[in-house]
Length: 413
Image (cartoon, rainbow, N blue to C red; front, side, top):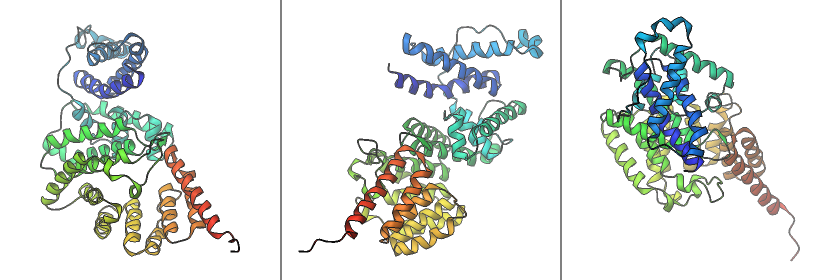
């Protein structure tokens, strides 16, 4: 098995092993430490010796031994050792996947939403602390401390490792959905790195959201979130070229879109909207569906997209939603109208590359190439994703070349 496949397997199994250890021993922090040590051992042995017949059992047994070793090193609890723990017997690996239970545990009510999201991205999503810090726009040391404190709070709470009862579940479900949304987004457009996508993260987010939807089939927002992921992921095959370069939505080859995912997503959001009411995920899914059912970019129902973004902006107050409403407004009423909306975002999105990129795009549509080039370059300088940087830089270069050619003196005929 190749190194990449081994890494993918470990990423898939890690939250399952962590969940099993946390349920068995009731100590989330120690269980995560033991799981990480087991993963390091697997990374050393599996590429050279081959993946064991039961990789999850191997990881669980190794992590279990690391957990016991860690427990024994704690002198203050040594007297409890004989009564609470024994030598690990040959591991019996349950068939159940406790990852969803782990997800709810990470969204413990004693944690702030930011801490719950960070911990879940680390424990369930498999993101490195630096990647999470980048998503939250804080230093890596700050995020490491936040995650450490979150684990300590869960340990202190003594909360049993099981799915929450219905009364508690409602209070934690919103945070769980937001976590899954962020994991998917990190997979669909990485905050940093050479590639635009991290498909293992978006696939894991979809898998977990399917589990959540199966457990809560009548929850319209969970259905909307799953629909949003499917409708967005359906475009991924056409989103980059053979060289990995980003291709914007309007220029994508829509015959490469995954029509099976689109059909599933449209059916989900149609049923979810029929329940009445619409939260942020159902509205976002409705927008995604409007784009996906258009066979050509020029067939897009932009007035509907603009209306949906207006409703979403009223609901959330999110400046990124306002940015997207500005683009939709430009498509309906012209680029000048969109640029006017963007002018109100400088204080709310200071230095954000997406604001600079949107302004560059609308300036290009408005026939102001010199200004558009300036903002494309600014956007490229502000993103840490290499694929986005390349796209924005090339856009600026091509526009500059075209503008220089158009403005050069013509030879006499």
